[in-house]
Image 1: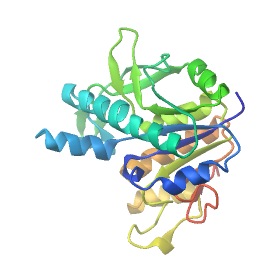
Image 2 (image 1 turned 90 degrees about the horizontal axis):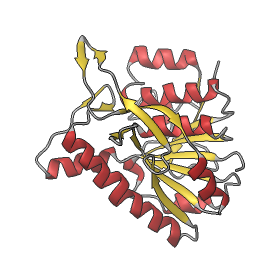
Image 3 (image 1 turned 120 degrees about the horizontal axis):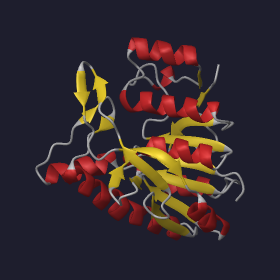
Length: 257
């Protein structure tokens, strides 16, 4: 398999993907798509009378939360994305990290967050990645579209952060580029002001953003994953909007220094 481009799309982008697919036709490296689904999972949880818990940008996954993740991400969202890709003249295959298995994981240990030991439940930490199935699908001319679920040696399934999956796949496949697509575009100093966009984000910028409170939660997770990918040899990492894959006019390039 040629060095791919790994594209992670968040659940908040799924209603506005027409231009995404049109742009994808012009990207030369073979794409691998990882999708989230936190928005949709929360909506289904609310319909079921369940309030999901999110701590420091990370979702706590109990028994019902895991079922909801499987129903929404490996079910409705994955099927929807494959159908969309097919209607835009791509050939796509829906997968999850359980297939193969691609994502071999272990249960996350409790974390100390704000003086509380948080047990994240059925949240998986990646132990290893097997890209054999992804390579076979890509080499056959299909786009792999991957839901972020993993499995351990006993067959237990886990919810895995989609940004983490995308970053780990970028490293494992020696990707040419990692694109972390958000519904808000690049990194903003002021979420209410598009003109506060950072065209580049250095470690100094990131430290300032954390200190001043404009890099938090999910964006903080993305920055950490971006830096891990860059440190492991991925040449280029961008945080950007769904309609900006090619021009990157409102995107943020993450820098190593």
